[in-house]
Length: 335
Image 1 (cartoon, rainbow, N blue to C red):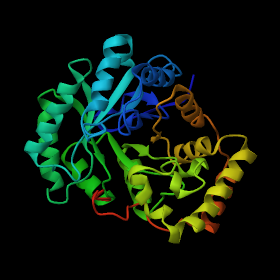
Image 2: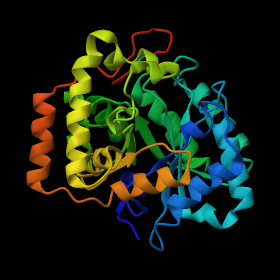
Image 3: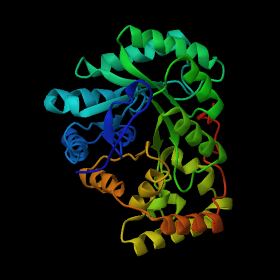
């Protein structure tokens, strides 16, 4: 049985695994066989102690064409394995960056699209805009979300890529249960630290997505030419940054070998060690990878080991921010 923690806000009594499961890779890059996906999902849930839930992260736009294929996959999973419905905590996200907006009517449309894709197999436990829409006041976004909670469309509210200041404004309207932000040894910005501190103060859980630095801290990417999709236009892998950042990746992998774990597991363990309610959110589409990721949350890092990792990060600072070189996809970081 693996470690657990509790969420925050109105979900403060919900017990979840210390490591969550992101489902995007199951459909975003093209579909995989259902049984492979189902075994990956079950593999993580089956490691949990009785009463704990696996936080599953899906979205309205995780399909290959920015469509609800990921939620439709989940609907098929729940139809085939109804005994797993109550063992999961489903976090859903609206398609709000680069496509639509966080206007109340658009949020409502997104929620309805997600519910339609799930076909009544599972109620969305927590809903969040995928990004903070800078053209819509966070107060207006929150009021729209609260209205839908009271209508029974979903139970809890989350925010994603919010700054600490925006988080405080949103939380003042209604308790935020989970904040989703990018956290990894390669993405540990000053604003990240501020959001972590605010969440600790307000008793809000953090779903830390891309804890493996979008796969870079695994050490398996030897050349940026191996990357596909939007990963090719990450700032950190551009020619002017790659050779510099590779030194950190290699030093981090060497320390993982010394620790006796994979670099992916060390990344997850490091993120998990940042706070009691910080939940690493790696993605995986194979059972063996899901299990490896979750067992990363079982690794204990001593103060001395954390200090050594801090030294590696300080001596090999990441060059280039976590954004993209292209403007065709607007990530709207730190709204």
